[in-house]
Structures are given as C-alpha cells and as structure tokens.
Length: 125
Image 1 (cartoon, rainbow, N blue to C red):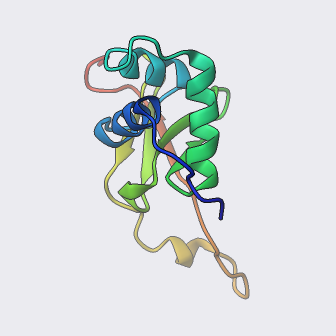
Image 2: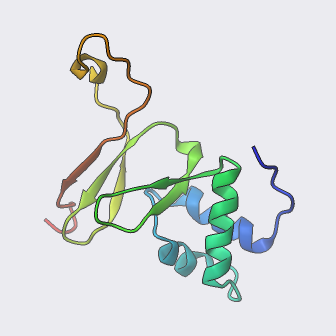
C-alpha cells in the first residue's frame, strides 16, 4: 500500500469533507464543499487527492449504475446505499441485509457484496 507522503491543507479539507458527509459524493460536490475551507482548491487537485486517498485505503469509490463514480471515507465500515431517483442523491444505509449468505447457491462462497436500494428519498417524496 502506498504511503501518504505529505499532508496539505487541500488534502486535509478533502478528507474532512469525506468524513463529515453522510453519503458518497461526486468530485464536484467534494470540490464545492472543500473550496469553502480552501478557496484556491482546484478540481484537478480534488481528483488527484481522491486517487491518493484511494491508493492509501482512506477513501473508496461507490459505483451507482448509470451515475458517475462517487467517493466516501473508508472509516464507516461495511454499509450499503440508497439512491434517490428524483434528486440523485446517494445516502448511506446503516444496516446490512441479514442472511445474505443464505441466498447463495450451495457450494458457492461469498467474498464480498454491495447492495444499492433505489427509490425516492424523504425530501423528494
């Protein structure tokens, strides 16, 4: 695993945004929030920092079908997501589906899983 070489105010602002927000964010959303703390922050720096954070296991990419990749901090542990079809926001779900392994055919072994629920969020209902 690569080692994080240095900490900058830009990188710290991006890490803070990923830690504080309650769901995965698009790079543009990360930029919009982090630029409040570091006005000179450019979108290219956001992309480079996200790559570095991923390489160091501090951020992960969340893929929602038909959507651009989103990013979140890895400090939240295992969880799933809810995608609102109206506002396109993505929210963290706190619990995991129980009995997921019981859905697997006999002789198969689950190594990981990712579940995204689709619908309409409370604000859009």
